[in-house]
Length: 400
Image (cartoon, rainbow, N blue to C red):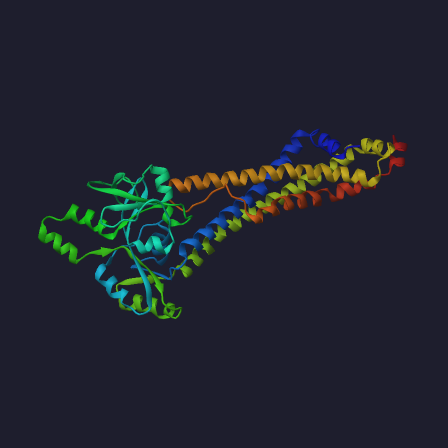
């Protein structure tokens, strides 16, 4: 007797009930899979992009906004800070490395970042084509930028004013691509890098009325923010307090702000995880009720199997096998739906130039999904299987 074949036929003898239980189980497992994929990739992205950055110094405002704008480039910075103040700050003995960041323009939704080559070196970026910039109006584009826009070495393009896209195009100041970065899985993938002088040149030439006005602008030059690496951990105690109390700038600690952000995001992931748990509980109860009723309805069939020589354990195994078949199909659908939703959200985030997210990965923690589905099904089938095991064939046949 093939238990699996009989269990499969029993399962689909009630297609509507089977479909409902399959849907509930699959949705619960899909929710949990999606939460694991998103939370794990967000944690990895934050850890990767924050590596080696101890503080971000910028205009006063929201510290979290400063971190999101300066490190992850998914928000608008609170303002600009004077270049003279940054040069003075760079002399501070507590600072090991300072990377200037200047924002203001975009190209097809991707941010043009004025900086130094130290920014690319900080993330250990490798070139897939060409070389780094050596003068103003030369650029190096990230892997995602090159893929989405078709830019390659030697191509020319114009930036649009503003970080939201759709702004005025600086048609008198073309950028030339000198290099394309290899994919690094970090924030550089979605940025256009150029010299800080490029940003000044584009905006100063566009607004200067004459040579005197140009000279004044050069003396009052600003950058958007600075990424700081300390010489020693002790600087984390005194440097931010010094900047926040004695200057017109603010120093934000990425570790503190991202912890706050993850705590807020964690509320949403816990809600999704709880939603998945409720669906799994509901699915388990539904499977239990369906199998309990099925055992009662099939008592004559089960008695006949016993008469044909099937031992009680095999009858109980038939009920358990039916639940496990349902769990196996739900696991496949749940994993497919969870990865599909993650890929859909990732495509939307990629179009927005935001955090990288994909459904085309497999996490070690996902091996728990089939086990979770099997446990829910086994628990739901335990009592019905026990009832089938204890079926009194003699009494049942005498009553008939």
